[in-house]
Length: 420
Ligand code: AMP
Ligand code: MG
Image (cartoon, rainbow, N blue to C red; front, side, top):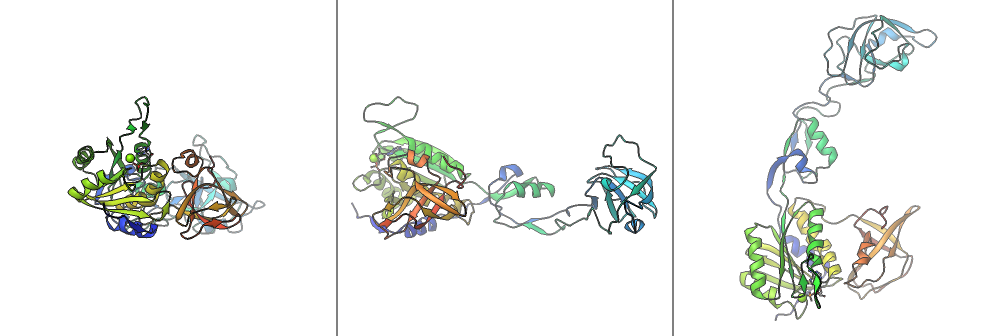
């Protein structure tokens, strides 16, 4: 058995990221692109707004006709027509006249402004109301008032979204407004999940003496799904080379982009996974100076990147957060690979062993700062302290004691307002 290499978190992360590349693009229906990364620039094929339209229910008119108008001496205009949203104006506004207009309706030719209904003696909005013959306007307007001109938001031919942009609801809305029903985005990574261990049972089987349920398979599937990637469950492999090989083979058939396994990588336990990867690819075993989650395997299986996470549920989840998450986000075309972090004031003292430590905590906003309290037992088998946490506090390498009141960086799972 070769000695595991000692790496810092950053060295391990750099090596993991060097082994994965951005996946190819695919064209998908607009809504299927939500949360994904644009693979091409999008050029506006129309201007937005596409035509001059009214921003108010009111009257389209010529601004100069209202010179000197006020409540005391309103301007009087003849009403010559009506234009609803979706309709086309069939009249021209000439001096001394006005056209009733609805929000979003095209401004009729001749008009250079709109006055809201509230500023007339006809302050009614409903379509049923008969068109008045004339109106009194009690204010002045400037040319252009209450008109939304074509191209004010987007000019035709403009690059409106660049390659690499993440599609959120607002981007989906902009693309829809430009008539884009399909977009080219990076395809989601397909990630295989393998649990290893003779002690593991599927979750739907009753517990038996000496056995535990394969919770990592579920945690990891959920982590993968939360990233917009596709989990492929390879199930549980017993601690034999044949079993591990057989499960990994199924992953190859499913065309996965990344293998993630849990357990069987701690010192003295990793021979099985190691033997298979050495025969069918390559592997490095690392002891990362990280807590929790010291053991980590990284390599390839038949050319596909392979990440072997520790077995303890908390170590597995935290190692996934730190390494697998970044790898999956890189493959999906993201450039921001880590969670957002905030600087927090710690409310409990923290002892560490000098490894870079990820401490389960709840971060709360207090006046102008963020404060963090630990969520209890930090054992790597204690899942409930993760359930209570909305963050991991990062104690830097080399630090063994953090007193109350010190500042640490918090790696946020959820925004601080979400307190469990
Ligand atoms: P190992 O890395 O094989 O020494 O496993 C470390 C610890 O993690 C042991 O207590 C295992 O029982 C536990 N463990 C391993 N795999 C899983 C899993 N899929 N779900 C939950 N616990 C696991
Ligand atoms: Mg084991």
